[in-house]
Length: 205
Image (cartoon, rainbow, N blue to C red; front, side, top):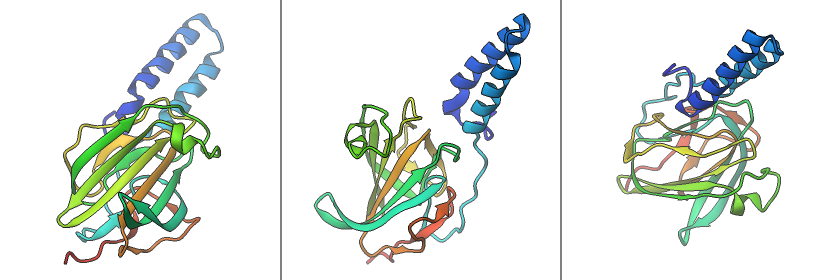
């Protein structure tokens, strides 16, 4: 199933496959359990995605979703450009690298899985912050699990190539903290696909 189904979904698919087999064997609502199995397969689908461009300064989307916010914010006591992408329930949840970069730090915090509409969810929900370096360019990604996530999957990573898979998010938000001079080519409300173009980093100085 590699390349078609996210690794995070294997245990759930196996569980519902066993339930379907038992229900079919005993004739107990097999269509219901088949529907659950098919829904699980769809939820954890993992189609191949090629990077929009091979430009080394390109900034790619880390996940399928909708642009919820573009603003100027503060992160690590610096003024940064902030992009918030909200992942819908039926969007592909595979997390992908936004650029070629080295991983300098991964911080995880276990928490709850509250609805994203609750303001307190950003503080209490399970989340991870990953810091990256790309030459002299430094940026970070915060991943916040939502109500339909049961865990936050982050693979053991030290360096990434653009669009390479590094985790899975069932539901929630991905927040990018980028250099202030990053050129952003998307707008609020726009739907994006993983590995599609969000913008460009400025040339290293």
